[in-house]
Length: 177
Image (cartoon, rainbow, N blue to C red; front, side):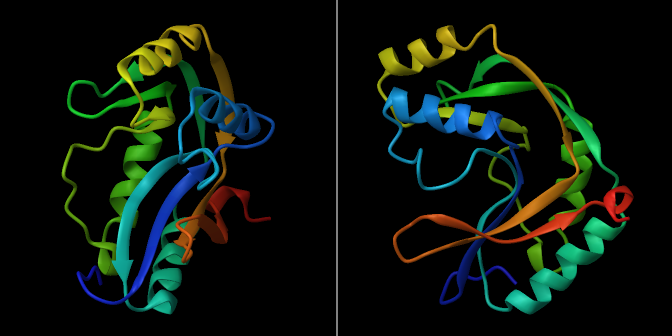
């Protein structure tokens, strides 16, 4: 139900767990990323899109979560989308296929959406900053490494101030006990 008119701007992502989420937010803030406090650290599954029926979307998310297994995410080192986009990110070395399978299931039905670029799961640490700051972010986090279980995904809604708020979390199938 993506629209170009009135609706609610939503997104779906794997939230980065604490204490790693606070570290990522701290890095984004230190690098001067103006979006650092607008959304929690995450791996996007469904990019921002307008929807008109939140109940239908939530039912779709519940159905996808109920048949999707948890998987391990291993972050190691940095990557960038430059020169296409001024972004530096933490790279996934494990969990790429899990994220890809989940985003494909999510981007169906009421969230059917064609992507502008091929899906590439990542954790943004610097965005829309000078080349010097992007280089600093890339270099200073090059040795970073962390692993966590992706056992849920979060449904976000953008508020009037541009902040992304968690509307609901959805446990993946094998985590529902």
